[in-house]
Length: 167
Image (cartoon, rainbow, N blue to C red):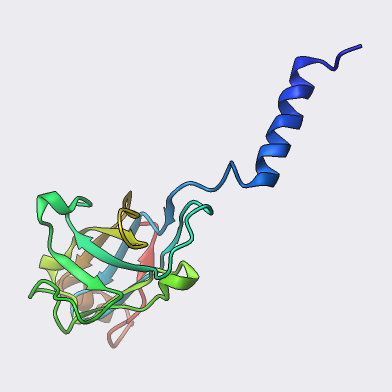
């Protein structure tokens, strides 16, 4: 007696997974929305994954502001290879904190100002044609000085370097 068709599909899937034919897709994880006060800094935590069959000799990445696609010429915020240029708005303010070889793409932005509010996109670079711009992004809100004054009137003094998630 032959096994039911669903059992054959299950066995085939398990066999393919064991041979490496099915692997993780390109994916990135970061908070979808963050906020911080103007004049402070923010760390945008980020992790990424790529297909296991790719065996890159080197792994790098960069962050774009406003658009994930290089053909749109978005400002480059930070690069994992610091020898390359970034947009003047982010020079000396943004740094790539993560280690791309560990699939960590964490970004730090210091001395925030309201013009830095917007969407931030990560692009993984595994060399050659193995580059991927993730559609996942983090949207950063930068609150002006009025929020700092409001916090002070509520008994919260000083400037916070903490970012607020889920806003």
